Image 1 (cartoon, rainbow, N blue to C red):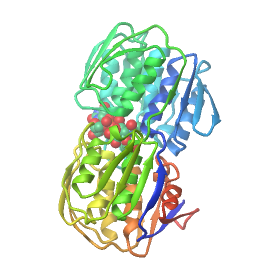
Image 2: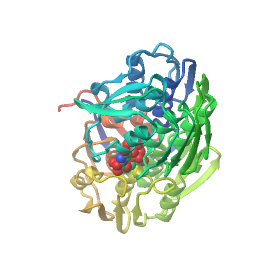
Image 3: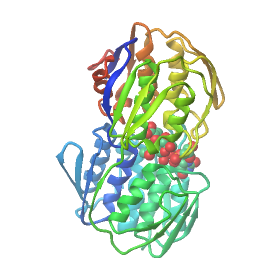
Image 4: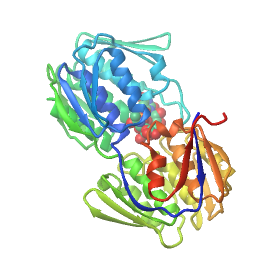
Length: 422
Ligand code: EPU
């Protein structure tokens, strides 16, 4: 398994481009299952999860052409199989996004039930409850969820909890249902909006896009479309923290600053200078000491849980004490003990972590446990004295496109060591 070797202490400087959003590209690829016509997606990030999603589509019988590295042309006319197997679901929970489109188009779908994962239990009861309300019969047998119906019918769905992929699954299902579906307490994350915009291009009738109440008037068929995936706001935020934690300066290009307001506001409060230099550019610089600021993760437009681990790495270098409260997932502090191994002063208490700083970090061997945790360890490695070795970097490859090359191009000393000694 690959590892990263980082020598800390280099201030980042330069320009770095942001890739397309993983969490938008995943549902947009799943949405291509809804139509017999070709859908072309641009700016699809070249990351492991997208390769897995492409495999899933091909397994189901779709033809996926990749005429250029980040363009996918999907023809799902030939889909015959309606089962997302455990082998794929266990490596990527987002495989569950095949459920809504398959049951809407074919009247049946089988998807292995994803188990718990490194950040929490992550049930899919909200996805299943909504499909049942739309007329699907749901059965769970042998770890596989089977959904069947003649044609889904519109319904009023009130989500008990805000769920991103749940909203996306039901939005896709509702697009082909008979009649009107209203989704109340829907997720408003930019990735949900991006999916809704693709669906509209395919002929779906969706109102309330960008709000927590979505109204979908089902149509009999959806058609082909061409769509560009939005920039990855979490990669953007991670790069901003990289500039801030090293006391460096980065021009972050090809990004969507409007999707990052809570992150920008928080970083500014810590003393990071952030300026929007063009509609798709941010200039991030840190010259003064960082000030500790407490934080609570929230659904969009609040501070994203997917930036919590990276922010914790930053707080290890800030003056004072910060309390970081995680409200979205019940077990998303696996990075805390690894940061401690580097010398961070942290105290985990239930759903919060108290960080006091600045703590001088020193390199050590540490282990990545999930995607965002790995990003936080890389950030800490950038300021730790000496050598940091991060094991299991396959986690970071799931969602960051060539992170080590991007950071190296801005002056970081980081290299990938192929097939390390695990
Ligand atoms: N939840 C339920 N029941 C459900 C669905 C969700 O109780 O049926 C709970 C979850 O257990 C969790 C909360 O609701 O406590 C929010 O979960 P959500 O469903 O919103 O998460 P998700 O859709 O599985 C997506 C992203 C995650 C991101 C979360 C929160 C994708 C593919 N994944 O997951 O991204 O953390 O939303 O914003 O879009 C990542 O990229 O590293 C990542 C984990």
